[in-house]
Length: 479
Image (cartoon, rainbow, N blue to C red; front, side, top):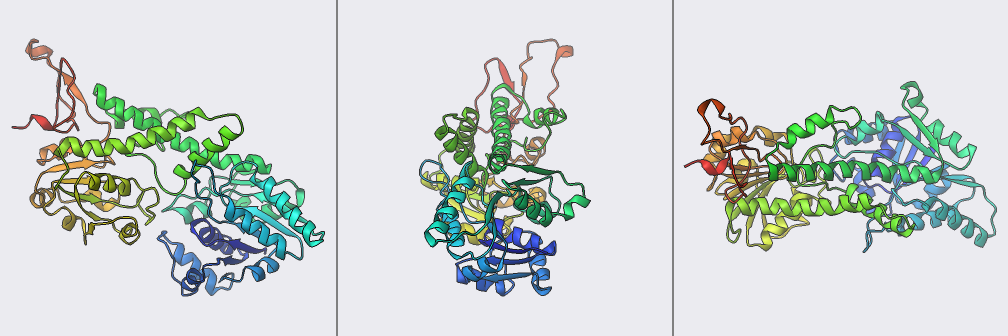
């Protein structure tokens, strides 16, 4: 059993602390926010994450997990200290490391015995060495010679399935500079040897880069398939078919090839910006990552254009938005596409009514003059358009007949492609999605036997472009 202190009780810190306690370690999660610590001591989780409450409750009950605002006592009691504080983006996208260095300085000021200082926060390459030098400097100021190590143990948690990801990871990455540090960290994750989980042992620098490289690559896949979706709309393809065919290639894989409004959340936006920033600083700018960021920004604007193309001017229009969190199974609205889109629509004069199963309280802190509904049907009542912004399962099974009856205009912008275009058209909706604007060539002058059968309904709105010499099979053709 290892005595562990986790500095920071945010998303990463709390999930990690609870998970390590479940492995049999004695864990203290520390935060200077006394209100947050009091909430945790009451058994309340400050954010929504499936099954996390059960893991926390079990380990608190069995005496392996505790919460404290006494940073000094926690540092002195633990041998392994995980830094899991925030690294928000600065003005130019660079990671703000002030909390990381502040935590490292406090550890150095208070430590009285050997400590393994583990970076859990996502930090640029070279941060581990800076932490090492900082601790050395503070110890020298104190006139103390105390052994310590610095390591990197990046997290790969997906919001909404973080507990499952922690308990059954794809891999464990351990970045160290000493055999002792590697031995301690390997021991903490010993249970994964039995599951034959891949254990990557490397240097601190490589471990730091692995996290950024992984997130940037996934973000790149999202931006790439969104560019293909936009191309599909221009030439008459179906991005869902394209993505499925691509994903069947084992070298590519099907995950993260889902066209939509772009990525959001607490990781991909921040980490791609940081990687682009420290790559430039290192003299090796990452053009692919920079392009990924640019495509993602443009994709959000395209969602506004889709709404505008479908209903015309937004001034005075009533718009219903389903989904506010950046993805389903979480209440996290950080860098949420839905939040940005609502603000853009409001700037053009739209009145917005919104519903989300769990994220409305957090969204209310980010939005002004938005009416929050009790359920999906309350949100769409009297709406000129419905925007589906987050793919919560309950939005996939809406009663279309009831929806049509409640709305003022039968206009739907499906940013997540959760409905079938032909089904929506048959139900009486003007329907727009992402990357599914198929068309068939105009063969009206050809012999009947040479006709082309229409098999897929278009998702182009009433204001969508028409190709010269071609006829789009879509929502605009109903009379």
